[in-house]
View 1 (tube, rainbow, N blue to C red):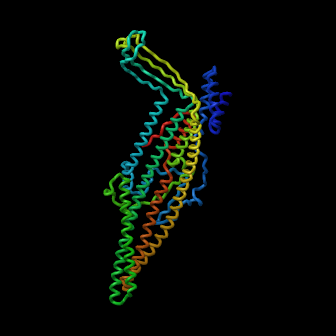
View 2: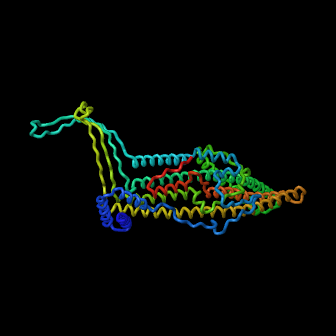
View 3: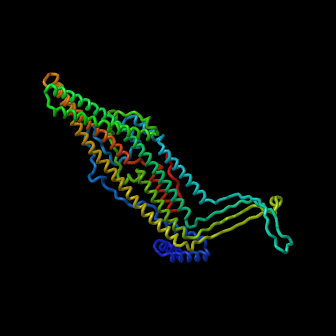
Length: 535
């Protein structure tokens, strides 16, 4: 009980007190430990107390809303172009959701990008390097170090006067094996290793988030390029119709059948439509160049555009419940790993205030000549032990612990913000799909109506009831409505991809939540954990 009171005094003073009080408490602890007769009981008490030095790394409790948005999402969207998307609540995310678009070309683009993207490859190599650094740190801190030393030297030193000579010259030969080990009594080393392991976990989750973001960017870029290509085709037809209308108006004006104002209006309409084409083509070029780079290609090797009409809109979209979203989103799991690392940093900063014990041993042979070195008389051994107790560091140790506590609070707040941002992302995507369906339904109705008007006008022209320019005008109205329909269809396809991305990935045996749970246990027990394996 007395030992526990001393440790509790140190922890409380280390967090809030002035520098002098913790120093005195640590001196009292050192004196108390030196005077103990039962060393094993002291070590048990120390280890039991060391487990509670960090906050533990458990993520803060987060609200679990009944639904993501201001209003609950409907069971399905309105039907647009014959498809009413269903929101399947409570299911797992689709692992390779891009395959639901029914395009082998799109699947090939995603596979190529995941295999060849330089940024993703760089992140993968950085992750592997971090894992090796973790292995190196664990090996160098948790196990004894053993080194072989050997040296030969010739020395020249002044001799004492009573020897009758003015100098001494001799050779020294030595070869030995040196071993040393620092006992991690208060858990500082283990907690430092746990913090590094959690940061490697965080880097692994960030890599997975980058991998999924790359797939989403490839899909949305390919969908955007297909949409722009269809828009350009429709706009080119509109420009051709407007030019034909302007030419016809020019002839009518020459015959006196149209006013000059009608001619100017027709010419202005044709020029205005033609002005839209360069911007659309520039957007398409930029998007294709960006897609080529995402795939690891040079811009001149951009893939061909997909056919927008051949893409299938996924009819069912999984909606992960908020509590499961915390396990499926890699960005949330990365924030959880950062919280575990910050918690371990607090424990390590606290443990730095307590003593450390190092044992060392040298075993070898030495002599003033090679024969003496190899003889039995040249054997030597050295055993040593050292104890280091911080006494005064100018307040640095306490400041480091306070800084670690502040960093933990910052990581805690960052985790909350990451979760809230994830909820917001899903809510926005769900609402977007409903609104996209409504807009596309209205645009499709408008296009179908305008197409019907065009077909009826064309039939009346063949009967001689209306002039041809009336047919051209009705076709312009249909093409304009069709242009809006293309735009809204592309938006619906892209927003569906964004929602699939927002849902995260289905948990697996080595998923982020399991890794973070292991890291939290390691933080509590003072044992570093390994990082999750990723393909």
